[in-house]
Image (cartoon, rainbow, N blue to C red; front, top):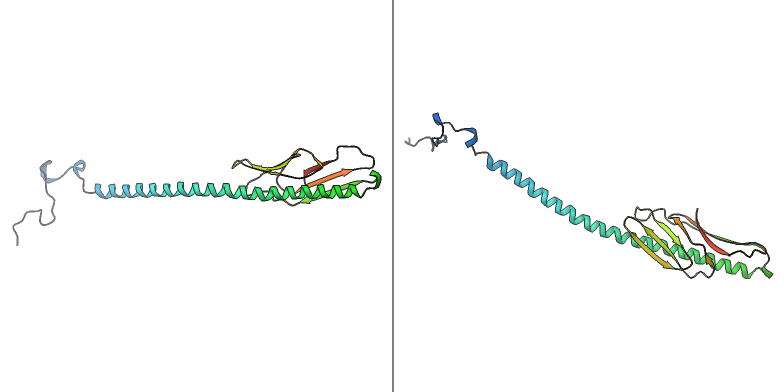
Length: 182
């Protein structure tokens, strides 16, 4: 047997700060390292997780922007192709009209998507170009067209559209290609 004191046998050591060999709760720091370690682990984990979320969020936003631009470009080109097809059909129908008699009625329908990349969009049509755009994200794609007939300036929601052209007997109207929603 050893003549060692309470230190060697796992007993507590009194620093003499309290009477009777007991320490006060305020002086007890034995559990602080576990608590501090736990809080630091949580804080570091939260910091790393928020960094990953921010980094991935930026990548997703950039990818969404590129996807919207790509889908709007395809949709705009489809709208332009249908506008130009209606223009060609109108010219061919008028060429077949002897002496400006008869009615020329051309309608081309296009099944454009209602949404691109999960977002609604607008189609602006004028005599020079078709513009497709979204607000969130703010993307605008302009595609020029080669229609020789005058085009009525209009704005329609994205989705199925109709391009029409009508000239009646003896009508001296403006002979416009018109784009409308279906």
